[in-house]
Image (cartoon, rainbow, N blue to C red; front, side, top):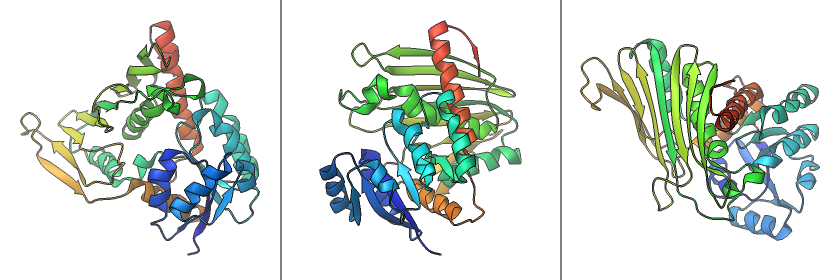
Length: 338
């Protein structure tokens, strides 16, 4: 199968440090070019990662007829604009999360997708790791009974004033950055959308971003809760993370559910009727896998017309509706319909 020719819009760290090196390990992915508004930054990135072509603007990359698909790790407030322009230029799009700053902002992309017949997805790499499909399979098998509740936590320490995640006007803050992961994970295992939500945000006095956000999501058949913070957990650059499921007959806990910045082996712990405390009845082990490589391969197979799992734009917009409702709840101090 012919490799998909990829272009990258921006020299963002997640692209340079995680996504591009991972995709370069995949025979079906050819990273053909990288663009930046700073030509020298594009050249430096291309030299570092052995990328053939550089562009001094994002549009110049989109004008390259050899590029078939683009990966977009731009700041959040630029996602919709460049997703639309990329599809209009005939490119398939894999865009970092969140897809937009509001659901209403993202919805016009549905019309662009329909008009251009391009594939567009939100780049939640976690969904490509087989531990997530294993969680869903465990629930569907009835091993831990009916799903009752989900709890998630994500925490890291970032006090850098120049980091885009600490800039409120371009989509910084805990809810957009890591809350989106927690919401996507909860929606995935429930296989449904929350009916209403309530949330509490604590904002940093200097950055004005939410540095601590806690939420409850009420699903038709259960509850989910999560806490995310950009000023908590390890102070050495690591990320604390937890994802746990409670069923009517047992429980499940993911050892390493979200951020695999360094691909690592991981396990799912499953507790049943005779489990005591946190001791599982059985474990499911996964070898070292690079979820960014898996994402690039799966999406490239989609581009080549293969019947592989898809994560349509409608799901990204549904995630944004939950984020919208949580921001409203934090302002209004009560439950909000999604």
